[in-house]
Amino acid sequence: MKAFLGLIAAFVAWPIAASAVTCSDETFEGNRYTVCEVNAQQEELRLFLRDSSGKIYGQFDAIEADLPEDKTLSFAINGGMYHPDRRPVGYYVENGVQSQHLYPNAGPGNFGLVPNGVFCIRAGRANVIESKQFQADNTSCIFATQSGPMLVIDGALHPRFLETSTSKFIRNGVGTSTDGARAVFVKSENSVNFHEFARYFRDVLKLDQALFLDGKVSRLHAPKFNRSDPGFWLGPIIGVVE
Image (cartoon, rainbow, N blue to C red; front, side, top):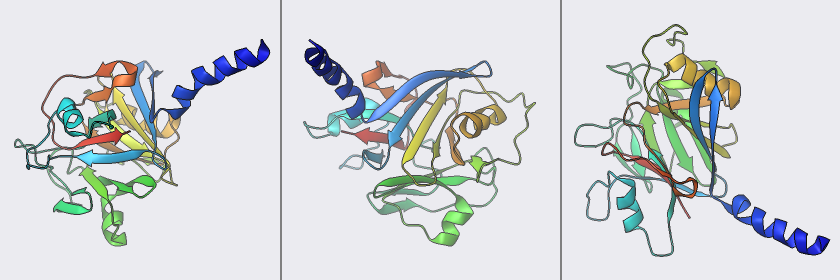
């Protein structure tokens, strides 16, 4: 009987261990967050913008429909700011091909609230890198998207964030571990300011590098967790294929 129960336990635990993404609902200081973690050393983490005909995907189901029959989009989230025609605002690389330049200097809006940063996917790792550091190191990425502002830089909050700020919105972002193994995506489920959002990455997730992706357009796709947010048409999309 013990052996039989052990087999059942192993069978039940296997799909959880094998899942490409783990997601959970969390709270911190009265704010609600959905947190999804990807093991970048093991999973096919990538960016999507256009299909083979050049048409911008814009929706999660358009990506799903375009994948081979034996593949599925197990996780996705909007992957950075974009123009009205849904072209990326900042640096963008897909399958090693760069289609937009890096913008590391100050400018209008959240994107230009420097320091901003790049989410860079390389073989077996993913890292958030501050833009000027990224430029100085001449970093090469298989996939990359630039956004801003940085939320956490080398363990410190962005210097412009105010704890008492009344500018609160739904926000999403990504933080990474130093070794590039952990890529943790967070979407707030209520409006938060930048200071609150950044502290979640630093103080709860213990991540030294984190990047804001976008605000009110924030959408999350995690079908194994019965979630696929409807809403705005998107530009770049970060996803996991399995």
